[in-house]
Image (cartoon, rainbow, N blue to C red; front, side, top):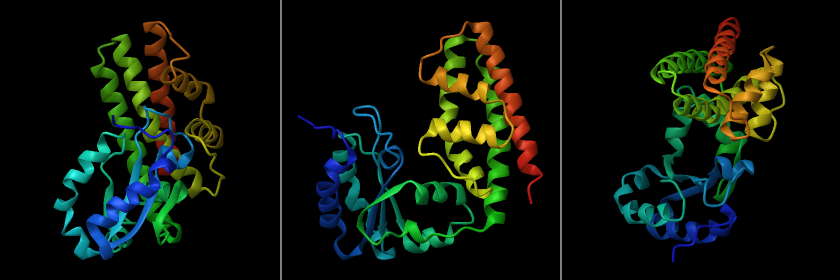
Length: 242
């Protein structure tokens, strides 16, 4: 029987040994990131995310990992993010938000702690924050219209936005040198407070995701409209940053 780990740490040794067996000296480092590294892992619900850093030569051998990925997928381990040190160094301008979140929330598993030493250009980070806020605003508006006012579709839309906004809000707080809370929920509420947004709106959206708040359809429509207004306000704020 396939055993899903109760915590990511349970599989660190076995996972590392499997990667070593595949890539040998081409393995540079392994790090846990995502919910498992944030202390938000939920048994049988959360996926486990690993960054595997290989040499450039190792990156050319990914076909060797096909069965390995299939094996670990059965144990709630997502397909690892295989990257080289060179790719990471050259991509901080393209993906500063993603790498910033990985730097902030990760656990070294094997080898060098490459993520700990990453440094980011404030201008690249600001531009990407602006791009993502405005992009998410567009998708949120489109998604709202495509729900056709269906209650379940509205709940799904609101619930799906939280993880993405949590990562974005982490970057926004870091850009402004504001301490980032440990959890997604606290990060979102802290950002709402810091940027003078309506915390109550975000609290209700979080409650919809957590299934502790079951509003009527008319309330859901109103909540989504107000949510979009708050994200629009945030887009204006970020656009004005220097």
